[in-house]
Image (cartoon, rainbow, N blue to C red; front, side):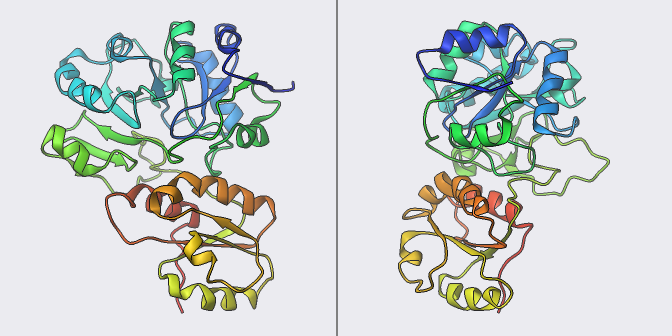
Length: 336
């Protein structure tokens, strides 16, 4: 099966694929998702198979508005959740809530009594969901564990022949997955950082905390990215926390191999004299977040042994980038 590339004039065809039980990759402002009918357990199983994703890793349910959420989520959570929806939807915030019994299958929830909901800020996909008439699951449209796709060509590289179609809307604008907040606990808890920051959420909810614990093999994660290896290219990523250390890091790893790639901002790249493959992260941590996954993919396609990637100081705006980069590197930081 050859995967078809569709444009924004072919949304009806994409919706028709979904209605026939096919898998369709779709664009969002964060990363491309892998869509399937969220109400059909047999089809949702195909998502796990196409990605090679563990079945206890829950999926985010994408909707075209709050009204669709309340067909499935526990209505007791409506007042609190709608404060967040009013402020951040459509947008890069995923909200976890308990669900009404019997409304969503274990294939969607990972066997939990909660589910994650998001309304993406992308008109193509909102039109797709509206035309389809039902929510769609949407994990990142990539091989499980690899860098998330921020362009249609990344999806095609990983999933060609495994899914029916890719709805192409160009490069994503944010480049890292949504913030995930869990409302099912006593204190609303951030399970995954994203462009909606902790301070943003505190403004709406008041008391908010972040969960940084490592999920054990016995636990079922409430949100994607908490348990399994994520965002990792074949090359070993090494995080360079101090910009001034790039030259010494290059000298160290070039003793082992000549296959070194550099992933950094323009300011850093302009100061590196060695002629190694480079990928620009732009000017700051915001553009770095947008280009991180694309950079990891491009350098990995060049069959690097090491990718030396720029780290940033801890700020609320660097949390999402740092989270993804640490996971892609397996927490490997350069030391002299």
